[in-house]
Image (cartoon, rainbow, N blue to C red; front, side, top):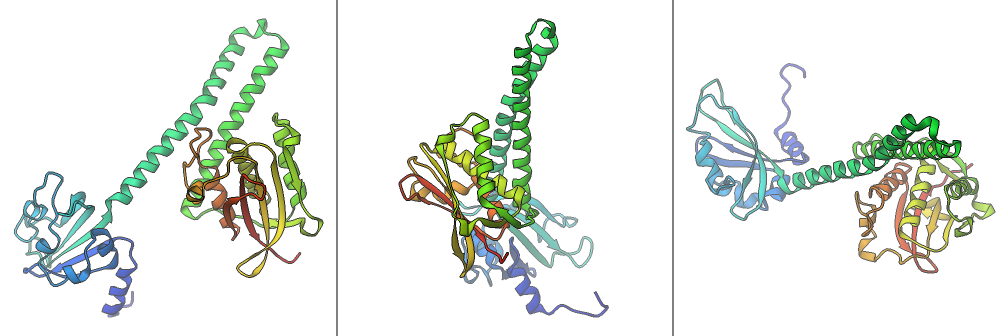
Length: 356
């Protein structure tokens, strides 16, 4: 920053409004609140009109989890003169609302009186939800890894100890099972890495024209090779809408996850197809995958794309549709759950179109 340059006060205040954390500032020995941003209003449930201009200890009577006054315990203005603040801790407002509070004491010099107290506030409930999601993810990963790794370990031990006594067919069966379990672990790791990329905004796609009919038929053939009945699938791609713009690898992931979802939660015939559509007034292409199951209740349709949602089923990680939404949105598209024309559920992913 150039020497002598000063950021305008109104620019500073406006910038603080866009911060995700809540901020309060009490200036002077009289402890009067001079600033409160919008996130602080949302987190505390108090308006700036109620707080600004009042003694911060009265306007924001924070307590610890045992009900003791946090202001009396810390006493920033008359407490230990070497303190510069407090690390984040969980505190409670009289309303029962829990907040995570960080304090910074502003002193003109070391051991000099406090001129201002600045509080940083975070939503404790949001933090708790994030921690619960992390715990759920770890539980899911442990469960999903344990089963295939147990199989790999068991069959590997059997092969090592009984190789000469096993027939060729027995060896082949065990090796194929080990390969299938290893593929399952690889898919899980790939899925988790992609979820991480989605959450951090680092997922990239490289769209190019795809033969939609060929791509859908290839996915059906893979499921048939894995033991599914070929008569359970119908691919319907009109000749005038056979090209779809997408990243080939990501499109393969999308279709594979949608087919997996139909197999786990639907029944009867699974119909795959594309059709011309519109997205924000511009040409687009819909990818449609429908089944003959019970469908998805309207109040569950948005939840279906959230992490760990399994519709009462314990099959899979519950990350499939969450991943699909992230992949579709990375292409600039959207995905919705709706009723299939003949009953059951239909998942419709809309991809932006391009001139070929």
